[in-house]
Image (cartoon, rainbow, N blue to C red; front, side, top):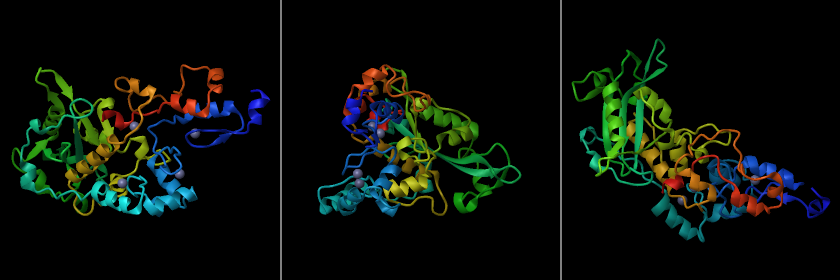
Length: 359
Ligand SMILES: [Zn+2]
Ligand SMILES: [Zn+2]
Ligand SMILES: [Zn+2]
Ligand SMILES: [Zn+2]
């Protein structure tokens, strides 16, 4: 680079505000940072963050840590929402939003009589992603000599209105050595019941697969989106897989993950972003299904400016892009170095599929 551009001072990333002495270093940063309009943002200073956790740290939300930005933290403490991290014009407007729009009520306790109702697939609501979404949850008991092998003993499938679409105990194919009663509430007699009450793994698998297929009036099949937390673990226990581009996993969605790129627990996400406790005492998978569905719907409802790169998102863009992909595959370094930081940000695309694109 010529010295004149250095004379103008440092080059500041338009998203995360990091500063670089040389424009080429900002371009390098932009290639790998994958900033986009889909990032969680501070509504005080407009800084982009990698995840909601990073944004919470920036704002000092919930006293999680010493706020990284003192001014933003002061404004946030006065009129920011600790759940969605929104900032409102006044404390009164914030309070109204928190109670009326943001804080979710606890999942109603599912009664066995309700869970035995067979709600037909006609109750599925159409929505984003073609056929709408169903949330899956399984409760595992232990097998193997030390009881550490997870096997599915109860499965639940919930639609977008929190109706139970399918719910059953499942008889594990191998002997159960640890019922984990304090958490699951499952006793040996639950898995012994007569026909129709306890399914085999095969029967549960087929029913779930059947419910995920939507028949349209033209007779053509359409697949539903599958929502859950740690879906691969649940699907492995049921013995089938589901296409990656139709999975919406709250354990794998980057904005809901830790800065360390590890998953958060569903219990933590529900408390932190929906405002209520789950998984206290005996746990029904219905509660997990509802929590995952509410988190999904909240992420889907985000209003993000659609970027140019999103056009590719509909079909081929899956949730696991290759690690070496960069934000500007079609551009030359020299062309990028002539752009302003704002222009670079406009062109930059995220390395994951944002759920707002389902909306
Ligand atoms: Zn940046
Ligand atoms: Zn988005
Ligand atoms: Zn800020
Ligand atoms: Zn809120």
